[in-house]
Structure formats: C-alpha cells, structure tokens
Length: 232
Ligand code: MN
Image 1: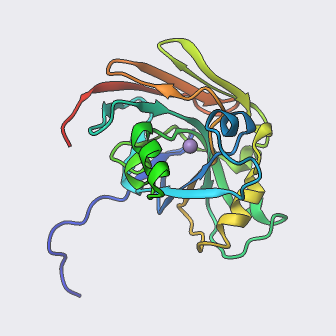
Image 2 (image 1 turned 30 degrees about the vertical axis):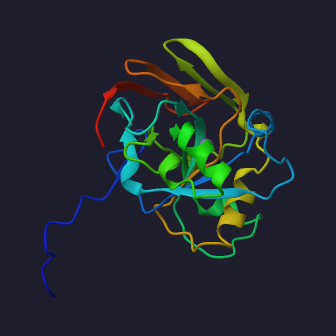
C-alpha cells in the first residue's frame, strides 16, 4: 500500500452524551423548509416535496466553540434544528423501519449566508456557498436513541439571551421517519451520516460577539459565540 502524499485530515466527529466514545461523521445532509411557519416567512411552496442539500463533514463546530463570522456575507443567519444521527446504513428504507437506522439525536445550527442564498435562488443556482461554508455546522452532544426517540418537544434559540425562535419538533412537515425514507431513495445512507431536519420561523442575522444558545427539549443545549470577521 502506498503512503498518502500528506497526512490525511482527522475524521470529523460529534460528542455522544455521557459517553467516552465519539460519533464519527460521514456526511451532513440537511432538509430545507420543514416547518410551515418558516415556509411562509421564506415565501416558499408548502406543497413541495422535501428539499435536501449538504454541508461538508468538516464544517462541524463543537459545542461551546467560537464560530468565526464568515467571509463574503453581510447577512449571516442562525437556524436551530433537530439533528438525526444515523447508526445503520441502507437504501430505500421504509417509513416503518426508519427509526431502526437512528443512532441518536442532537441540537444543531444550520448557519447560513442568507444574502448568498437569496442570490442563488434568484439565479437558479446551487446553495453550496450559502450553506456549506467553513464552521457552518455546530452540533451539541448526541443523545443515543436507546434513551428514546424524539418526535415532539420544544425547539428554541436565543441570541444574547433574547428569544428568537420557538416551536415544537412535532410541527415539522416531514417527520424523522419520512425524512430518512425520502433521503434513502436519493443516497445510500451510511453509519455516521447526520441529517439536519429544518428550522422553525424566526431566522435572523448575527453579528460578531453575539452569544447563541439553542436546543431541543431533552437534548444538550448548544452554545456558541460569534467571533470576529475572518478573511476567506
Ligand atoms: Mn436549515
């Protein structure tokens, strides 16, 4: 076997609550527009099938870490989301069997360069630069599904202690089993995949120095501070 040309990067991973082992991340999938109130605030089609996009696995940010204010934006947004961690892979997973593929659940933030997303939508272009930038995926510790699946519970986010988002994950348009079933018809799911499941209404801008807190009832609270602007 030949050597690598340079040392390969470390495997991105997420903490597992009350465990020494970490969850090694393969891919990060995301669902867009999955709460009716957020679909309305974005002026989107409420009848559309689930919309998927991706972030690179190395966009992960640990709970408690600072997030650099990203380059090339003046409208940097938070989006608190329930994140599903996949522990068993598969293709064409049925809605009935979908929860058997879940390793656990965590709170995550689908950080977004909203100005780049609006421009991409207007021109019919992909969302990669709006959604998949460096440090765009903070995720708190994963609670194993052995402690129960999560189909309801308050989801909330504060900026500098002020409430900005509040809903209940039971109001998602596509619930976790339907998301897993739909995604597994497009990609082969693998252990280590994360799925961000969409955000409720109340999205808005961040500035350097802001303190973010967000979570889902029963899961570890996600806390991050926005650092100073950095060049690309
Ligand atoms: Mn989102």
